Length: 283
Ligand SMILES: NC(=O)c1ccc[n+]([C@@H]2O[C@H](COP(=O)([O-])OP(=O)(O)OC[C@H]3O[C@@H](n4cnc5c(N)ncnc54)[C@H](OP(=O)(O)O)[C@@H]3O)[C@@H](O)[C@H]2O)c1
Image: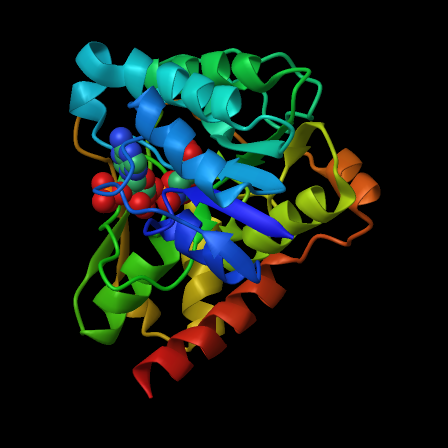
């Protein structure tokens, strides 16, 4: 199966590239997804069976000016060029309000900030045409992990890096950040998306782990799993956030698991596998 992937050099995209055998993943410099002609030329030249749109304008300061083209326009470009190929859009738990949590695949989006609104609008471009794979709190090994931010991405790697270096790590806790989510190994998300592609599925999928946790629990479970010095952990308020952030974006993915025929992994299982991968990278 031939798979064309945007954003293949990114955190999620690099795991997607490894999940398939026959891949075309042009870099940003080779194909700018906001350029419809470039996207069409690249996809048509490769003639894929499936296209996965994972590229993202990750600079939130540019969303007001460039967000519509960067998210909705780019999704239109990919869908428009896909022809008969299957389409998968990578989306996010931040399409939800963060009130109540345990959102299922059928819960209508209720975004509270520009990022969530632009991703929800992008999902509409794919509706009736392909699959939407919503990810949450993606964890993995990266050469340049972000430090802690208002979301959960890279949280485990950032914490492990700090504590292994003997540095203190203050776990943010507050009303105005993402406090509860569903940690997901990037490699597991890629495997779930590969199953969506292999099965030719359409519709909305929650490609996440099997357990939702708050930041404190994730930090404590990470310390335990990695054998770190818990005395270096602290808990305190985050810096002021320039945007409204959804509080509890936990996902219920039972329908996805049933459709794809998988059991979603516990947090302990994910942390154990992440630790093994990190040891391999360090060796
Ligand atoms: N990370 C998470 O925790 C998380 C959680 C939920 C959902 N997601 C979703 O996962 C997807 C990927 O996110 P990520 O964390 O992997 O982001 P990332 O690491 O920042 O990667 C973004 C990728 O998109 C490329 N890109 C950016 N603008 C582009 C453009 N105009 N044309 C072509 N390529 C462009 C980047 O290339 P350059 O670096 O060369 O610009 C990079 O390869 C997104 O849809 C995001 O919403 C991520």
